[in-house]
Length: 103
Ligand SMILES: [Zn+2]
Image 1 (cartoon, protein in one colour):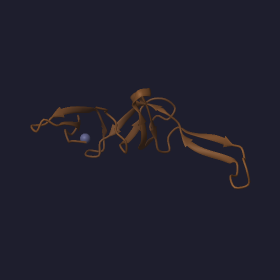
Image 2 (spheres, rainbow, N blue to C red):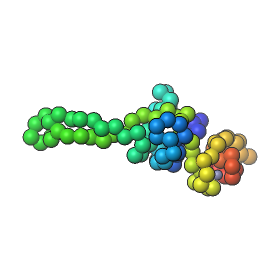
Image 3 (cartoon, rainbow, N blue to C red):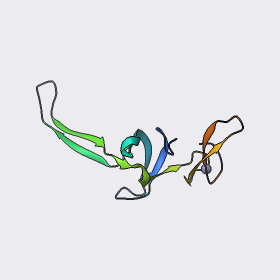
Image 4 (cartoon, rainbow, N blue to C red):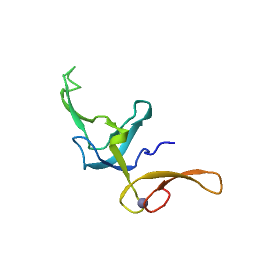
């Protein structure tokens, strides 16, 4: 079970984008990285191929190491340490270590 999920709001805690926040767009758990909306945006220059596809600059989010981000708890709004808890029903849930809410 991953500590960070798609559509989570996260804050970057390390590196050049430290302090920025955004929504998780995509996770590549195998490569230990994810993409956060508006963070680590890279510009890619695209050459014009034909009349219908003009060239120019495409902006695209670059990968960020999963360990460099921290979840912002939707319950308490703080940077959350994430834990896991097994509920009575036997279902494992993700919880915020600060407010103990399921996130
Ligand atoms: Zn919380």
